[in-house]
Image 1: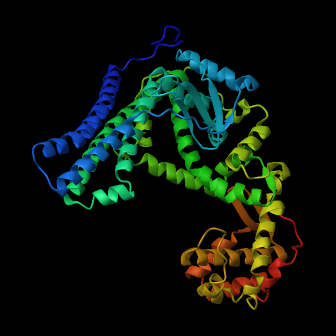
Image 2 (image 1 turned 90 degrees about the vertical axis):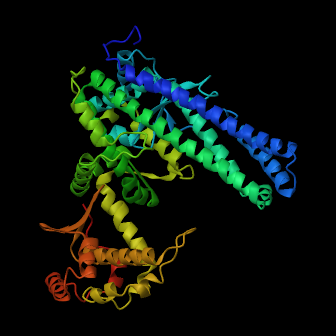
Image 3 (image 1 turned 60 degrees about the vertical axis):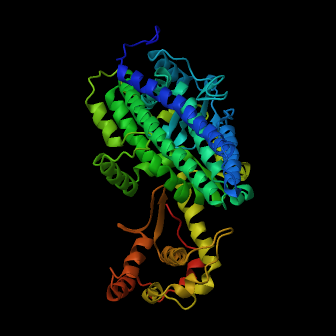
Amino acid sequence: MPANAAIRLPKRPSLAVLAVLGVFAIVFSYIFTLAIAVLCVVLPFLAVSHGVGGVQAVALLLIGLVMGATIAWSLVPRRDRFQTPGVLLPLSQHPRLQAHLSEVAHALGQELPGELYLIPDANAWVREHGGVLGFGSRRVMALGLPLLTSLSVSQLRAVLAHEFSHFYSGDTRLGPVVYAARTAMIRALKNLSSDSGAWNVLRRFGIAALAHQLVIAGLTGYWKLFMRLTQLISRQQEFRCDELACHVAGKEAMREGLQKVEVASVAVHHFWLTVMSPALAGGYRPSFSNGFARFLIAPDIEAAHTRYLQAMLSQSKTDAYDTHPALRDRIQRIGSLQVQAQASEDNAPATELLDDLASLETKLLKFVAPDLQTETLKVMDWETAASAVYRPMWEGIVSQYAHLLTGTTVESLPDLLHNLSPVASKIRDPQGTLLTREQRAERAFQLVWMAFALVLLHHGWSLHAQPGSVYLWKGSEQLRPADLLGKLRSGAMTRIEWTQWCAREEIGSASLNSAVLPVTKNGD
């Protein structure tokens, strides 16, 4: 343990043994692969030199030379070329975040990373980038904006402690060497499996083709063994970093942080697709962090995430090639630790540690979508999403295909929903994409429920639209058009029940074409 560490941390000699085993596996992988390269050349040469002749022997010698040279070239270390993962965060411009980073780093006797990046993923990581085989590298840390949005300050400290523990334990020093060995093997297999003309000519000869298959089989077999061993070491490292983080930031913060990371990693893609993308397409730039925070606590979304988390905590499935243990195993291991919390609880959102968050979000948006003209987007508050984003989006889609809905009234929707083929066949393919029959039918259904929603808006209903919560309402009644028509489409709602519902709302004779008319009532 470094002399300047602020707390006493438990030692785990078994992890040192695993690290030594990992180093041995890396060294052996290069020796093993080089030995195969040498044998590819030596064995055919010995056969020819001892009088084995003929076209097959010559082909074996040629393919052996080519395979040996290919493997040797593939093993040559390449320089680690760093690709910027997000927006650079100069710590001097974010003193509150810097203070927490410094405290956690000091607790583990570590220096602050040379570079800190804000990334679009619900993730946090540390690495040593640059140089060759880890030599000449620099420390880099990345923090995901979706992650900061999901976590409290205390939970963020636990996540930071986990990441700094990778520095403390030396994982990041071994990481580049492991990565280099993996990529060398992958590169060798990829080059050997190339479909180039030279390989195709040589593989026409039976003995050469057999030798080629044996070499690939040998490398593949060892590569799988190597991956299993290094991933096992990686999972043990994760357990160790969880333990150290509990000593620094407390068990409860670490446990809650892990669960929120799991949920956020699942939620962020759905949020981008269903919430942010429509707003951007409409020419608006709402707050990502504020929207994602609202999205996570929307009743339906929160319920779905609770079910997902319960499922994850009820099963322990760890594949031999997983880099991280199963969430249940990590939570159980944390629960068994005898650790006292090292910091008072701070439930403030972690995003409060960032200064000028709006500017950072714009920069990150530009990083994610370089072609997006962020300077032309209008700033939008999520309270206006109904009138600014959703209703115009529905109107725009319905107006494109209004002619396909001619003659369809609300009461006759069961007939249309039971046979969407005439509408689906007219749905245009997005640029660069060819829709399947199922995708085309689903888009036709979306068109129909959007048109139906607009009819309801035209007849006294209002639109509530918040991230993760979109529905129509009138009085105390709430309605999700897609769900209602989904029941009608599946038969869960009968035609008689539909007719009665239409009569109650007095919209049975309304044409879906009227959906593109201006609505008379704004959404909330």
